[in-house]
Length: 226
Ligand code: ADP
Ligand code: ADP
Image 1 (spheres, helix red, strand yellow):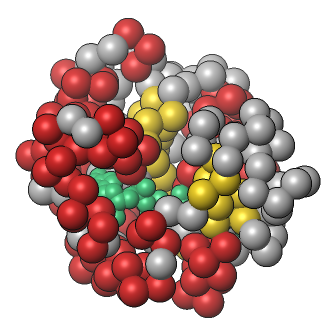
Image 2 (image 1 turned 180 degrees about the vertical axis):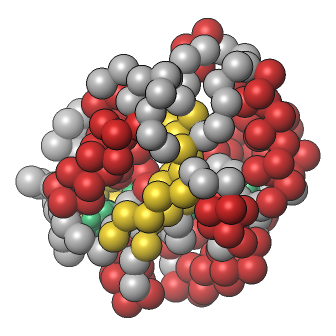
């Protein structure tokens, strides 16, 4: 697929944005940009940004817009982002969305294509409480629904599987509140601009991927209908 577009995956924590971003990135040949992964990487490396944001992620609160925007702007200036990219977990606030519009215009990429991942709250809780991530390559598993072949070990690279500290129930509660208050309004913003597509993300990984690919196929090319 040759999609020259900024794709944005929005939806609550645990909706499957990361899982589908990895699949769509392969399908479309676009880089997968997860602001959550970038922030966790900064924390792991102990950079000044990492030190600032560590307590915020630990409490399930959003990182201030200015910090996220400079991180994103820096990433978008790299050559692999010239023809489009997939944002997973960004933007998460209206100011981030408005500033991203300016960046996309400056890059000549025009309007983004935004996919809203809809899932019922009970499924979200099951997915988050069972999520395991490879500490080496970032592969995503689920203890209940997508377990590795050998417990605790990544099928792909043998890395150790870990639970994200913010997937503990008390932090999950805060993240869902932050989503409802600060991120959900983005769907109206993008719907009004005619770029929002909704996907039933409560289905299986394969079914969601097929629905997503059908949308991306329609959007392909300079005169894509979305
Ligand atoms: P999930 O995919 O489960 O929703 P993420 O990995 O996207 O989680 O984000 C983890 C945490 O990183 C968030 O709870 C928040 O603290 C921070 N974060 C990630 N992206 C952003 C963003 N665009 N704006 C503000 N904070 C962010
Ligand atoms: P997000 O990036 O939106 O927070 P993830 O892609 O990390 O979500 O998925 C959260 C958890 O749900 C992971 O454990 C993943 O294996 C699982 N998962 C993802 N998509 C599905 C699906 N369609 N059905 C069942 N489980 C899923």
